Length: 617
Image (cartoon, rainbow, N blue to C red):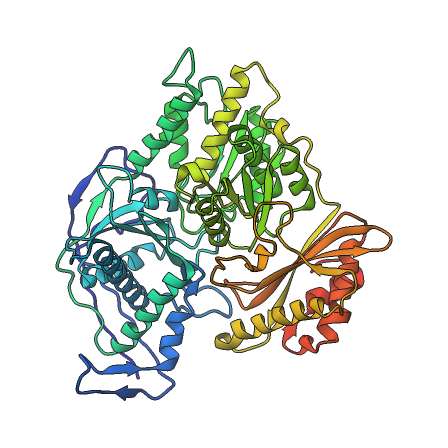
């Protein structure tokens, strides 16, 4: 069975943009855009009807599951264009339309429940990164929002943090916002992130939206879209957001000689990876007096031709390092596609990401807020915990996933525990002072302010000097085990394997291995697995075990985590002794995976190779 439908939208903004507009624009626009699609159903359609029901509910299990599987923790992600081996397109315009409609209805219901009265004219903004699927999927978002009765505002090329800030900064202050991005994933992918004035939505909230969207999607197999009666309004929010960042730098540096150009005399290299981060160069740094000559990959290009826009990417960091050294620059900046993450390179060419970036931000934050708790994911090193403790801070290790880490910080503050920095090793970092928003540009703003302050105080050492005493782990490795299962059963199979891992440790079957907890912080013991009074919903199963032996004592840890992106389990191992990671991999392989029979449901090829040879591949 197949269905084809055409959508006619009064849109004009879908041509590829090469940059951000230089002046605010607020105007409706018209044009026609169409898309068609077909659906193949492999299962029978079962119709349930009731005389009291408002409409007949069409239940098509397979099609409903497709929409539900698009949920990716607190985001929605999928394959939007062909070109990825082994993956079919699942983030289609009809799917996006149903999700956007469900989000619009969710926002309206939330506002009505908070205000106690029906609401009208709910305003929702949409921004997107430069991916090639952005135009057609934006049209679907606008159609879905119109179906829900919302007024749509098109921000065009934007960043994820800017979308959230569009709900706060006047004169915009939208009721909600959507960012269309798939972060650092390939050009074939795309996705949606959702915000209200309270912040990003949680995984359970996105799950409820996708569940509702799945039923809408199934019910529209023969009727999809109608002409959009109220066109979206095109707005330039990025200029306001950039001014917001400039004002923060000017006010906090408070330069005694040139207040409006506090970055005069500094050379700063930006590598935006052809994503949405180019604005930071010409609309923030240049206007503050910085010299940005030598910056890289500033033009938006949804094919990402030069490298993956990702501060964890070795090519991105190497190119930025080379540009910093070639131009004798004071700082290099690397943004991911949608600028909710960042990394930096110091004046000596040292890349600062992962644990180093967390340490740098912790050093800055602990100067401003002595004794603060720093929340990170559980893949950080034992040396980072010591680094934080040496500066009078407390380290709370928590579940992997930027939303998990941020939400933990929010909860700690509600419980009366000062937590000013929440940061993941991936580069996602949020500050209490910035609405608990993971904003890569704001993180860089904090680093730039500290760099200028240090120079004004007479120091020429550079920001790298703040983390000179951070020790690096002797060994560190990440391995993957693919789940052998149909896609719809993969999540359950992965959870089963990780729970078995926990049971093996608790039953003492892995000698010297012990489930890890928070460590030295003011939180209930065991918050890694949320045994405190306010447990969070589990989006993916994961556990970390600390590993000891008679010769070395505690010398490392191993962390198993169910991926929410793909049907696999990530295995992170870190050791302070030679061959410690390989030794832990052997124990994992022989005494757990093989002994428990889990190798039958997991592809342990990488574990096998590393355990035997110490080589990853």
